[in-house]
Length: 256
Image (cartoon, rainbow, N blue to C red):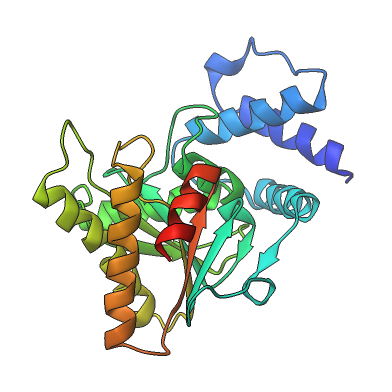
């Protein structure tokens, strides 16, 4: 199959899964098709997919990743021993684990083409990621607590694993509890990474987007928490602070 044929195949399969999609017409342009595919993947419930679908999906996502390019840890220059700062798309970063800023349901973002990192990670990982998350949460039996973390495979992402953590939602001023919960997100991810023998973890800017944690204060807490742990556990886990916006890059560069 060509990449265009894979895209058409995936769209046909997903549109055939639900009766309410019967009147949706296949778009003509490639960008419109890609947007529809992302939307359908975003809203798809955590149910198994056929082996044929997964094979085509994996081939499609791997080809898309190759088009976007992969950044590896050895391509980066540390700003401190064991600490890196990198601006870019975290879904193209080949490290042991990347951190996903999840919600308490831990199943990914169900809003079609939403701009959050949770949406992007689940889209680029493939439908298997939501299915694994659902299994974890079904076994747990309740929503994930703020400041805790879970680990899953990375599937079609270039990272080996994804660490999903729920950051605090800021309503009004930042409380001491908000600060402690954000720090707990970083500690929980690093502890989970250590338990699984991981050597590199890329953190996104947890809670600073839809959860409204002030960017400067969040960066201060992130850096301090990581620094404290690295002092206690030297030469164990290398940390990449991943930022997407130039404003966040400027904050982290100044603080580091």
